[in-house]
Image (cartoon, rainbow, N blue to C red):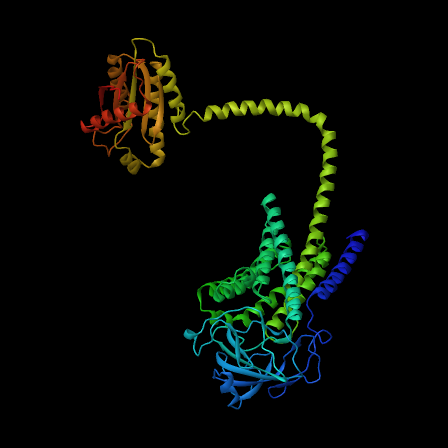
Length: 620
């Protein structure tokens, strides 16, 4: 790498790091400086004396009632089974035995001073159905809660709901049921605050997600265009698929933008699409790396990663939701291994001084870190949010720089070669003339070849059709056109007895005999197909029958042995012939000749073969 290239790589990596900071600062924040973070204890969140002008995450210990769907009235009369931390899966820190799938009731009492008007809750996606009451009033249903899988309808959507005002405390009761998603319960923070504040935060999040998803989609389509212009290079295609599926996944996760555009999308369909995007992204990214760095990628590793991803993708398409969702942590291990190996490939390519590999390392490192973040966030180990779209966007920026440099280098090379070509033009003119003459001769030879049957050396069907039209137009007055259709008797038996090589030699000799007679009578013979031949000649009616007899006799006199024939020890031929005198008022077509000659040939075979049948042509 030159000094200039090294400087450029360093500047690019610095730019990528700056871009990460910029995008991270633009992303919706989840830190204490933006939202107040009091913690609930024993099902009570004490906010007395605190201002209600900001959003507050209702995190901490919620009252938990396992295998009970309680109304607010019933919940007030029962002691909780235990207290669980929110946000987290309901079995993560419960003091009671809690299964992965089932149903439960959460309850929280928020104590505060007089509540400001127009307060609301920002409710995240809770897997996979819930009903929420606030101060005894049922304010929202997400899907339909049920005590078993058949009685519930899942749904996934982030929602802002306005809550009824209260003087000193707000009581929240949430029924949750889940029989599909591997993480059950309230796994993301529910926020309380002014509706305008919550709406503003939701809008920022949606705008941020739209920016990332739209940017990835546009860049994916751009790479599709690159592939369409250079289809021999598959790298842009695989990279485009990778960008597009990550863009689609951005619509299906987080703020679930898909429901803003298509509220009626079934939860099961969106869940399958979300998980299928993971499998397709791993496959497409692996194939992309193989195209870019084939010498650094292990073929066995590629086969293993693609096979595992394809199997998981097939399970997503065919199996029940809970089955493939249950396997997600294992597939996430595959993703982590694949991304770690991808980073290794980029570093290895850099050490081997592959062109511009050093520039890719910065973007690849950030993308790998974002994948690790998403895996940890999906498992509930960290609360950062999904960052793969950011990492991918940074990686795409680095890739776009590389692509621009490649095109710049290609353009410089093309300019250099253009200058060299101008110097060679004068000497090439004479060579071009010589090559032109050679090409003209070759074209004439090829033209002749297109009119000749490759095996027998006589005219082929295309040439015969043209000759037929000319003869129909130029036949002398009073003369007839005789059309002969011939077939070698029992030729299949000949091939079965003597073999196809001998069969080819037989066809050549018979074709030669027919061709000689055609030339002697100013006619044209051609191979019609297989062991069938046609001939056309300008004759009288009597001459047509005589010529047909001469053809049959000459083929028989070739004395080509045919022990399997029913007509004798030699190869014989059957012939059907029709004759026609052209008339201005009634023209005859080639198809009519073939049909009537074929009928005459059939009659010749019916009479015992090794002969001919002549019939006058009937204009139809």
